[in-house]
Structure formats: structure tokens, C-alpha cells
Length: 461
Figure: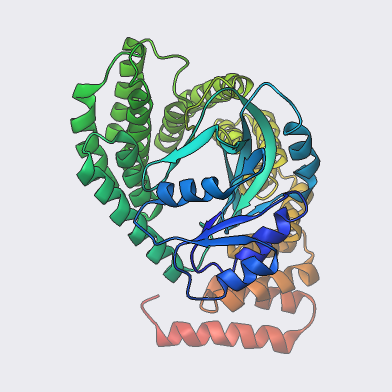
């Protein structure tokens, strides 16, 4: 591990791995909190190194201190899934490969986003390169597994995230200044802007990168083949910035141009990140048939990527997006009035990711359109039990219970919603009507009077 000021996260991380490792090697790059004290309480060997604006340098230092046959690289904001420890122990007792691919489950706004990368490797068979968003280079074959590491680094408070983004942007720009053809740094810079919702900055950086990189693309038969993948990833990230800005024309053009270029260079199979983005663009445009076609193509290609993970060393962003594809298809089928197909795909989305709120909302909408209100209510109640219900779910539950004349059940959800939106007159009326139906006339009167008072104060409404 490499750490700096991680006292709030380090204990959970080390608790998750302490029973599976023989030694804990930590390089600290300048902590001023209790990070080192916490590390030593777990028996960690802590080494101090100055921070030189390079994650790879610090990570490679940590590798030099390791004495075990295998290395597990984990960050302080990550935790190993305990149920997967037997899989890990079994994997390192097999011969024939030098690296083990794991599943990184990033917690983002209470959702899980999955990508696959190598985090376990034989000592002296791997090293890191690049000063930021460092890449692990492993010699030899890799084993694909579903060992899970939960990453909490994108779920920090706003102030900590701002500091993180600023540091990352600074280091990426520094890397690009050192080499303007560093396509991996360009890709990460565009992504950094996109994840901060700075979409126009992402577009500007992406188009600048493509202007520099595109004329220098080379054949897949050369040693610089990886640049082709970075070109595709820059196109993908930039297209997503256009998509968020609702500039569908430029988003589609960028995707189709990238796919065409890769086809010319005989790069197969198609880049699934770009295919997924095209599906999302067509969905947003209302071209539901085309969107379904691209989501289907994405799911087909995704399977081939997963089946050949050992041979595929490329970074793929959407490998864990099966749930999003099923949700997108369900939404499209619903808009086409093909309700049974919509229900089938939305249920698949929830099966793949039980904490994906959009799929529950879309499934509820389908059931409501089919007048299957009990199933709609049960779908939303599951979001409550999963702990992912938002204010819109609370309001919808209240409305559905009113529709079923279950006024007593509607009241707590409407009250909870109004704690968040006390000025929503429509919801106040619904609550007042529920009280009235149950014979609680004084409570109903308070609601009606509060709404009437606001209307008197705001005659324009």
C-alpha cells in the first residue's frame, strides 16, 4: 500500500485483509494524522518516502520491500470482500500465470460501478508506470476472477472530492506537459473533467487530444498498438461529455468516427465502451429501436470480452454495465409499448444490480401503466428495504397507496417526503385528503389552510 493521511479509512481496509496476508508493507508519503499509528497497530511495516508527484514511484518503492511470493495491491479507500478470500487463496496456489484480475466495485452515490483490473501478481513480475492513474505492467498470463474489492474513493464528502480532483488534474496536466503524445494521460484528463461535470472542459481537452493523437495512430501490428485503445477511450469520454450536454449530433459523429477508424485498422472486436455510448445516445434521442440494437450488441460483445479476459489487457470501462444495458432496453421496450419485454429486461437489471434505483423506477412505471399497482408498490418497497429510496420514491409510494385507497399506508411516506419538500402544495393536499378520508379532520384542515395561505400570499400561482 501507499498512503497519506488515511486515518478515516485505513482501519476498515486493513481489517478486510489482515487474515489473508502474511505481511503488510506500507509506504507513507507524508502523513500528519494517525495513519502511521493505525498501520503499525496492524503489525504493518511502514517505510517513509517523500512525495515526488508520482504514484508509480511510490508504488514501486513499496514493491521493493515485499518478501512474499505474491503481492496484493490495495488502497486505503478499498476493502476486500470477505466471502471471496477462499477464491483468492485458491488462485495463488495455481501455476500458469503471474497476475490475477479482480473486480473493483466502486461505490458512487449508493450505486456499484464495476471494472476489472490486475491487483494480485507475483513478486518481481510486475511494476508500475505513469505518475498519475498509474498502470500495472505484468509479465506473463493473468487469471480472470470475480474477487471483489469495494472502492469508496468516489463517495467522499464534497470538500475531499474537490481536493482529490484538483490534485489529479494538476498531475495529469504535468504528465501531458512532459509528453503531449501521452494518450493515457489525455484520456484520464478528459475523464477527470467528466466526473466533475465539467463537460465543456472535457470536450475541449478531448478534441485537443484527438487532434494531436489521431494523425499519429499506427497499425495494430506495431509496438504502439496501445495508443489505438487510448484513442478509443478518449473518443468515448469526449462523446459522453457531448451526451451530457445533449449535443447528440457530435456525440454520435465521434463514436462512429472512432469505430470506423478502428475497423480500418482491423481492430476487433468493436470497442464496447463506444457501442454502449451509442446505445445511450439513441435512447436519449428517442430512437428506441436503434438503442435496443446497440444494447444487444454491447451485451453480446461484453460476453466475448469477459470470456477472454486473460488475453485482453485493455482498460474497459463498461464491462460491469450489464445492469445498465438491461435497464436501457427495458426503458426502450416500455416506450415502444412492448410491456412484457420491458418487464423482463428491467427485472434482469435489478438481478444484476439490486441497488440500481433507476431500474426499480422504470419497473414501477411499467407496472403502473399495466394497472398492476400492487406489483408497482412492492417494487418501490424493495428500494426502501435496500436503503436506496429517494424523495421521488416516497412521493410515488404515497400516491400509489392513495390510488389503492390505503390512506393509512400513504400518510407516513407523504410525511417523510414533505420533510424534504415542505413547500410542495400538491403533496400537502394529498396528505390532507388522506387524513380527511381517515376522519382526522383537524389534521386535514391544517393541511388545507397551509396551502390556501400560501396561495393567498402568492396570488400569481
